[in-house]
Length: 56
Image 1 (spheres, rainbow, N blue to C red):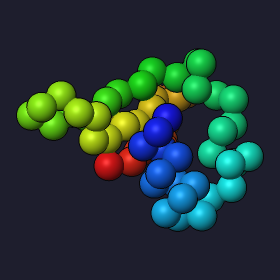
Image 2 (image 1 turned 135 degrees about the vertical axis):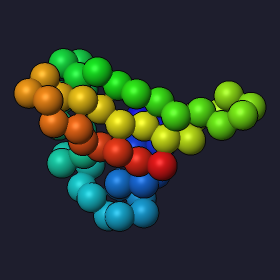
Image 3 (image 1 turned 30 degrees about the horizontal axis):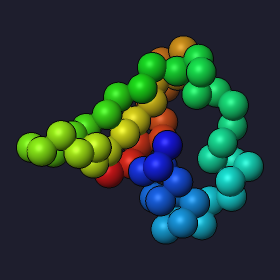
């Protein structure tokens, strides 16, 4: 969630109400890590098959 907050809310100006939509619990989440294991990206797959909230 930290990366999404930085990218969408802080950098892109998306409202917190829009970003935190309550659908996270029903989604499959993917993380991208760098060589040291630090998380550098994220995405979520919604039950209907859509990919969303991709942030790097």
